[in-house]
Image 1 (cartoon, rainbow, N blue to C red):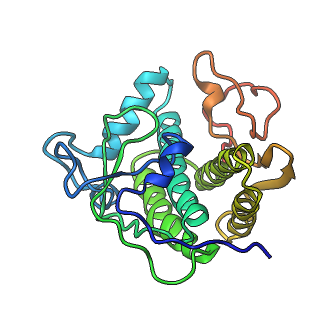
Image 2 (cartoon, rainbow, N blue to C red):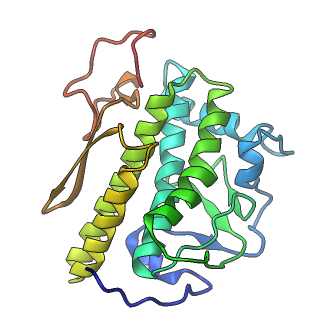
Length: 257
């Protein structure tokens, strides 16, 4: 059993900053410029500045990568946002022993931002109950990644298995970075907590068949059973956790999920 010293969430979530940009949540009652909430994004509501923010983001990512198909941009955009959400939630659960309310109505997102995605939380309040895998899954999977996947698939030909694989890959990457930070700072209990939470989350029904997980001295290792399509980007290759060991022969009809 790992014993944690549970502390309250501080109003600026300052403990996340040393972990890097993927873990950081900016906190402000209002973002510095008009930005859509993620609730609006998932509902495919238009904004005055971006039109459909999710389509705007997918096209921006596709142009940046010079992707031959928008479904590649959709995959990469979804995985980037998933990584941000998992990182912030897992970081808070491990470092604070509490998870902030990540209701999509409280999170503003910049579709025109770089990587990592720019997120603004307009109110910091801890969710009730334990910071366990069930609470994390409800906050991130149910609250964000399920509606995000539905919104993407409404406009882009992206396999659901690919998107679930992206979600699992993003979670494993966040856990690995958090574990490495914990070991580097002499906090083995923190590393163990991150590893245990991640194992429980990867057993969730939406993630359980997405890949295989192993513990290594460098942190949580994950090998997915799907491909995010990055190999189809000009100059791209396979990712470290890809189901492929080398780029396959490209085909627009090849299975991705």
